[in-house]
Length: 305
Image 1 (cartoon, rainbow, N blue to C red):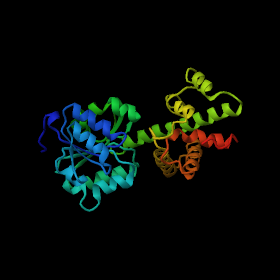
Image 2: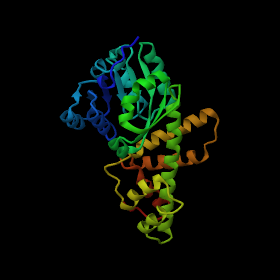
Image 3: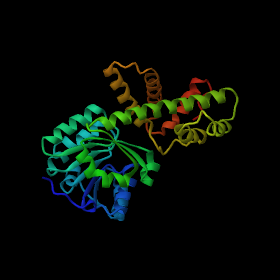
Image 4: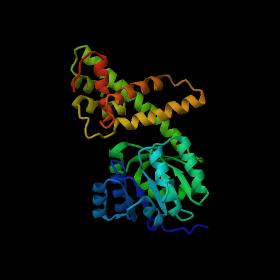
């Protein structure tokens, strides 16, 4: 039986301290959790060390001391590399440790990871988040958790620091990713239609700023329109608050999953093609509100970069 520790005695390892991970670790440190961290970018690591974190030279080194090992990486390939490449974290984790995957991944990837970790006595909790940088900073993320109830309960003290809306959506690893996938479908479609609507207004000779102000106070508003629409108006695309490449990746998961289920994902599939068009233009590292530029070009409004 795994020794039960007082919540604040749980040692948290954290891989990936970028836009989301850095404020998440900062909140854990403020709450009293000892944290060991690793990222290929030294700048956020140094900043967090100044706040009390311990830096490590590899993911495996982080894993050695971790009761809970959190990953906030970009994609399936990075998660697989972190956990299973030679000198990997999986082999360094102690039996009974828990890996919490908090990035948006494919359902297939997290289930394969969970099965491989189980072979060495390590648990996996599927816990993708929504709320962006602001939610990570404020500790108000929505967290969609899939996994056994007893593993979820052990992780709640950590999750409660990171998010204010924590949902145990199912007992199976992958259930959290399925919910996040549906959320991302709506994010992507809302973002695209926000760009299309503002470009239509411009085509009609309306002022984009005026249109944004009115729609944000009308029935056509959405959280995404308010958030991304403001950046579309200001054309503040760099540095990105949410990079285009992330939505291209996430919507790809949605489309693949729907295809495998035989589900005709009509709006999602069309939207995915639009995101790929924007990606081909070299806009991957810009904010996903850059979709306004694509829609302006489609509307024949010229290259406004």
